[in-house]
Image (cartoon, rainbow, N blue to C red):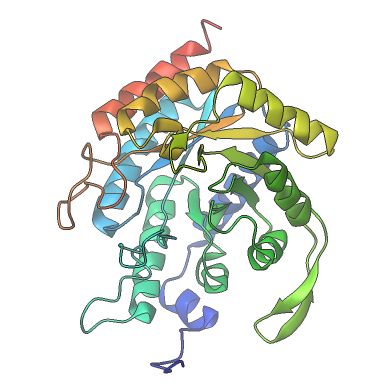
Length: 330
């Protein structure tokens, strides 16, 4: 049984209350095109998506992005940096923190959170010009933030879902799709096929048809039948996925998630994973979990992850500059 608490804010209400400037709208479209060009093979730079596991604090997230902008300007000839600002988290355990959008504090509401998240996204885009990357968990996110987000991800718990495949197929930004928790790369290819094609489905009381989206796979590791985390960022696994993509005539762009099962949940291993990925010619981009402070803290510590442990800022900056330097050695 469902109890209706209130109506969700409309797209018009949110956009009116927290608008984008004309300059930011243009920046957003430019970012969309750059990411699509890289994912589509028209721009040979590497994509780097980095940021906190969950953007739990708007002030900390904006500060992180301001710092990231200073590095982005230094490495932009070889790397295109995109802050990861996930506001809704698909958690294995239902009682875990579910993100800024879904954290209904006492006396607050999810609707209030939608305004809070939008304000954070707008401030990042207006102040830094960096693209915003978010993970899609609810159709409402497209309504709330679709005019801001330049890069969308479908997570390991949603990638096989017809619902999310349909939603993603209607997006006009690049879409990264992670392999499922079992690591089945053939199923990941099926998801990519479904998202890239035109689809007809029901959406919010409407019958709609999508055009298909530019999408790519993200290898994030997996858990075997015994529950042991295993990586799939090694050369053999990446090569096998590249073969599957070619066999199915799918976009060849591959991103490596340097965290999650690929790191065995040891955030420090991200550094080695990132370096190895950048050296692999089959890899077009990487994803990092990093924040202002190193590690993981229980809620309430400014700039420290309350979900998965992250690289700290100094480690992140050093790594990004090192990755940039690798291009002159390869």
